[in-house]
Image (cartoon, rainbow, N blue to C red; front, side):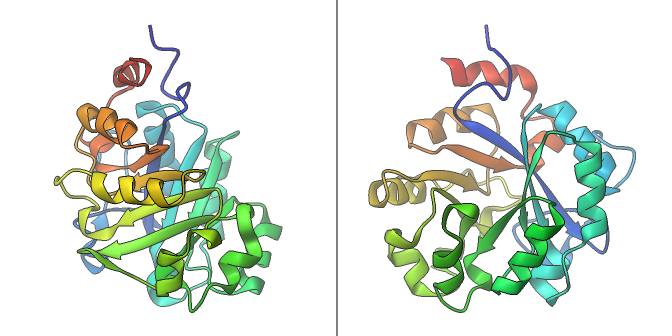
Length: 240
């Protein structure tokens, strides 16, 4: 019998995408078209409500939050929404991508105590911030349609990578094409000591098996949870 969804070394990390103070539904990475989410997991799109619903759908100790206003528009991190999520989910670590690109911006975020910063390659101008933060941050290696986003050195030099790395395939986010297994395998081969998390394309429980076989440490997921294609009982797959 499974010990529970969060007991396996392979981590399923639920995702919240924030836009204008609400949680929005990802569709093939086309961020400008994201609309407030409608989901059976929550009575509305308020961040705290959706966070509670995701934790009910998959109990975990970690949530990933993408602040799209910060990533797309250069806005300050939505501390109100982040604080509401944190208050609704005590004991849960937030991984937060808020378009961090400067040391001062990361320092302010860390001082607020609202989670662990995710450094998206698409937001970087070079390797300095990734190098400076090391394992205090998570690195998201962002790509779209096979094209790496951000400085090439971040994708090419695994010596720069922190312990935890996200393979963020934006074209697959919110879609049904399946995760990028080949990409995960490539990253794992280049940095065997890194914990690599897939992001984008998870369809259901069978993909958990495939990702684990490819060497992934976990997967970021939203649509499959909202649609009921991934449920707590599927955690038993990770014990097989």
